[in-house]
Length: 195
Image (cartoon, rainbow, N blue to C red):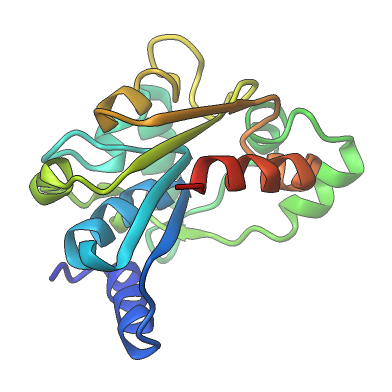
């Protein structure tokens, strides 16, 4: 198994609680986590749902899949920190991640953020077993998500098309639509996760 702490902690939780036949949802960086979980516990997962999530090509890291300006920004922020972490600047949060919120919501939710370690974003992922897996997959695409610039670097179809056969579920909203329209997101998760 990977030494990725995120993956190991979820595998341990699933096995300790003997969970089976569940839908696993990954958002953003979480796409890399659920792809790895599909390699570790495929027999337990009913469906994978990638919600505006990274689906790295085999051998790539999340940083390899990010636009150059984000790579430069994250590397610079991590280098300037005391502990190799990245804290997203508020203007990027406001304009690219949660532009569909009012300023109070954007500010309140930004205060919930904490610095993230750079290393998991830089770790190369083999993902050979994920790409060979036949676990059913869905992709939720929030159509106004600008966290990855739309077009060449956008989430859909760039990331979603890597899933092979998959169910596409689209909805309006930003990368942080869970704060701006949680009811619609919940309905779309149900739609994406149904058998």
